[in-house]
Amino acid sequence: MKRWVGGALLLAPLTWLYSCSGSESRSNTAALPLAQVDATNGATISGKVLFTGAAPVMPVIDMSSNPTCERQHGERRAEIVVVNPNHTLRNTFVWIADGLPKARWQAPSAIAHLDQKGCTYQPHVQGIMVGQTLEISNSDPVNHNVHAESRVNAAWNESEPPRAETRLKRFQEQEVLIPVSCSVHPWMRSYVGVVAHPFFAVTGDDGSFSLRGVPPGTYKLEAVHERFGRKQISVTVAPQQSAVVDFTYGS
Ligand SMILES: [Cu+2]
Image (tube, rainbow, N blue to C red):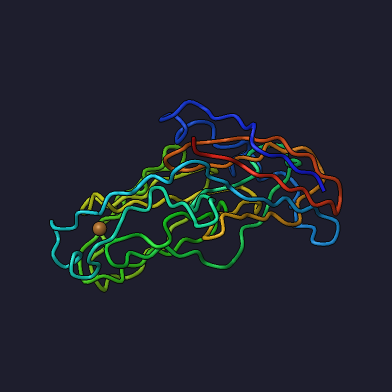
């Protein structure tokens, strides 16, 4: 088992969101062979996203502009930075940014979901594949306005009233990450990573990630966090090998 800790490259702050979002787009992969995850001989790349230093205190969200939202939630803090009790960072998107063999990966038929509930987006960060359906719903009794602030894919901004039909969206190009905001409630913000292959994950309450069935090769593994930006680590895996890669954010 190999282990890489820290030493990652942190790109310039504030520019991370719209920097290069990966190698292949759907438009130029149509003629490539179809690839499949190799569960037998593929490698596993796993690890944690660590956070050092004191966890920043997130502000309480001011929902006073909408009493309905405020009644639903009471006091709620922003999810911009969530440090877990084990000193790891939640809501970090981890993916293979470069190095995969030239191939076309099939999007899963499973539908991904983004809900507007309690005047927040749930989940806060998620990954989907190029071409995969994202169902956007509104569980609230208030009007929301969903704005996909994409730069590579076509952006859109659509109202979603209470009890409206769910919206089904697909993104045709790789783009990491797309901010999704609400024009009505400025505190509402979500991020969707759209990837041309299945090797991505989002850290949860233990800060870990695991990418399975990865073809042997050398990859640029990237972590992306909405506040702390991008970090990249090079990792090489042989067939059936397990590699552990930890990213470190913080002071
Ligand atoms: Cu809203």
